[in-house]
Image 1: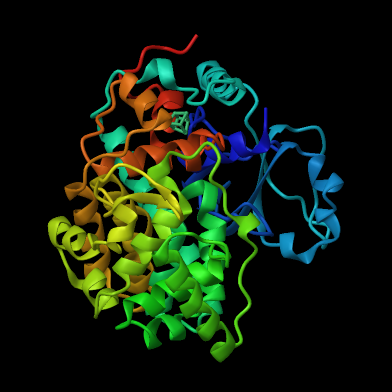
Image 2: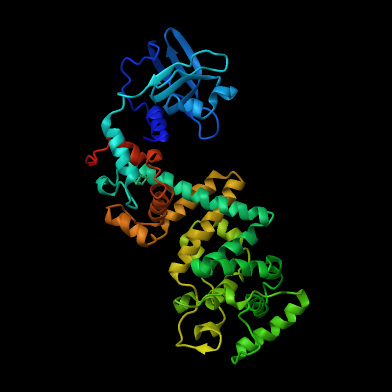
Length: 430
Ligand code: SF4
């Protein structure tokens, strides 16, 4: 058994609490088991426990064996002098404070229902990506719904945290952060790093400076990407290159190496050339950041982001290679992904920075109004019977899997807790 399973049992009082007594024979009753402490120091604080005819308030330390206290050198650590109860699975020795007084000990051996441990072992030792998968008949139960909401909130906070760390590097220039986030998302997994590097190679002040000159902005972005050369045959590319050489000299710019971009195995609509053209078109909007923070309708957000790149891209996916004509504007999937993965995390971060809970709520409302993402993870949850009707569902299922199931945080998950306590009408684990 692992110590954190004992923490879980103590935290929720999941042991036989009848006729409790300390190992030296005093009757005891925990009125309040305390607040779990994830940092250094004793495991629980602010506990209130009646031992004999005395009421104690203080800390509780938990170990598998009582002698672990000595292994961890707590006997010389004054931070443990306020421990009022030592909770152990096996009492193999008495433990004393630094002043020599005995620390009352509660031994849990013989007080833990066998089924709890068995269920926990089944969950923690499973190799499945979702260990409780066979036991989810009630996908609309309170435990499942509350867990989905918690996982979604954690996922959004995690994304907002990444945005805020970007804020430290940009002195919280929110328009610049939006520029970087949009670029990264448009590059997706394969070219996301290169797109973000491009936003450093073309600083936001230059994007602003050339906002109203589409050709110069495109020349800057393509030139600094390293994808423009002197050897192009198409007039559009030649003009951009000439413009770029002028701007490069004027601003003393150093382009990225073209080798940072990946085209292989990508579908042409995901080619970085087309994505840079789409980014350039989106950046032509005035008041983009403000609109992204304020608009409450998915339709309006998409409308603002759905900007037409230069007509050259309607017949090209990359320079000098002509293809059949089609729209070069970013499609619904891309715009929705952009809102989910760039705009809403930025809103969350902005809301956190300004302590604006109403803005956070609106971000969650927007997720409910967006279509669901469909990928291997969401499909596997759907096969288990979970609903995936909108982006709120898909983001919460992704959060649940990545933040809880993959990290085996079943003891912190309300679904796992109910399974272990056998409170939900789940079939018994084998
Ligand atoms: S974390 Fe929760 S949902 Fe995931 S496997 Fe454990 S109990 Fe199931």
